[in-house]
Image (cartoon, rainbow, N blue to C red; front, side, top):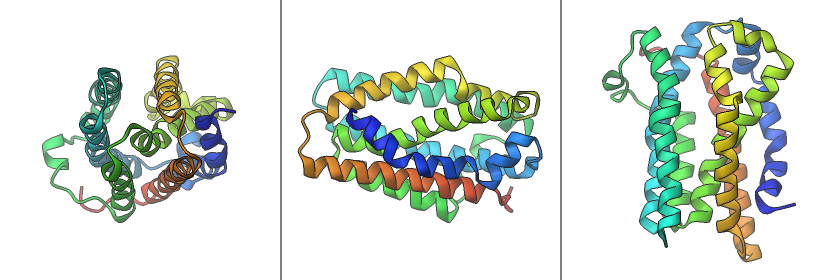
Length: 222
């Protein structure tokens, strides 16, 4: 078992708890109130802004062009592929980024991004940067593929586009590329540093769970 697989195995129980969260259960059966999803889209927009900073730390500490290209591909995904779906829902709810950016991060969101920034900013090294960012990427792929298998009717709800994007082949391919890169940069780490990276991955997975829990409560400022 390679290192990333070890990290995923360690966090899989947390991802399963995410899948059973109120927000995602209601999304799967179509009973999720759109006010909750509207709040999620706002919170996700604020999160992605901070998420991108993790890659900035990585670029600052990059040792070669291969690393820079890897972070650039991540930024491109956030800015283009993922942003397309996010903007679709922003338009649906009559929201604009300029209005969203002035809003505060809710406590669970702030705790999550602070964890990522601490892990990535303190080292500015690829292993820690990838361990901070991979739980979001990989858990989304796992969660929404599982959701589609269990509740395929979700495709026919207002959330179908969102779920299908993360459960699709393109996203799976990107996750595989980022996993391969993470595996490469984590090769040869000392046992102490591996434990540290595993801890970052698990902590960020726990924050993913808290984010989903938060999302079951609508924002009151939009």
